[in-house]
Image (cartoon, rainbow, N blue to C red; front, side, top):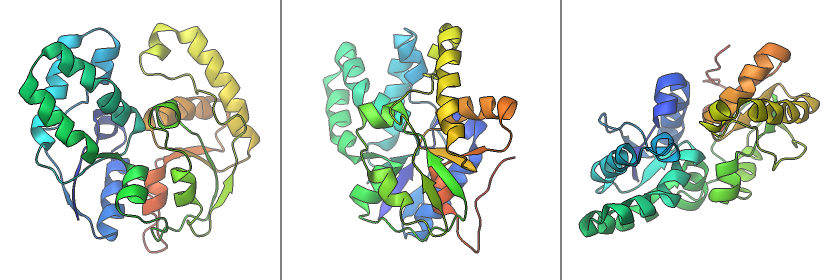
Length: 250
């Protein structure tokens, strides 16, 4: 199977280890990966802050880059939600029927990482080994927009050596929300404080998720208040083996 990796601007800029983990994981599973060097951003931050022209530009770029891809894999439920939920409205506003048809043909081939593994590759045991106590944070876009359901849990249940601890109040938002955390800093900080109490209560070594944006928000608070716990993207756990342990940034 061939797939094209859309790494997202967030991961490319701040968390390159996630991209490397996705490549290692999928190549181990026999996927032939390609990477478009011209990729940039999905346009979510532009659309959410009213910069429609810039969002149009990123959406068009995405379609033009990936229209011929067999599949597109994205290690971010937030970006996939942007593509599924907001691109249709953007293209309706743009009024370009040809572009709208191209996007409609492409959309069924765009997958969040856990969707790709479960729904496209039909695999749950990816051969991972991660001997640590871990709790899982369900990001809002994955939980409410993509409805990922038990896909992440099915993947994590097969990781050898890992002790998975249920996070209390799983459906609570961490308070990040992209620009929300900037525009509404006090509310965001209050939400983060409550979420952090739940995370710390698990006594896990690591908190994992499908979005590095949430993990950055949580990790910053952990660094200040609870240095004993680290954050790690689920791709890094799934890519980890006895021969090649996860690349973890201290």
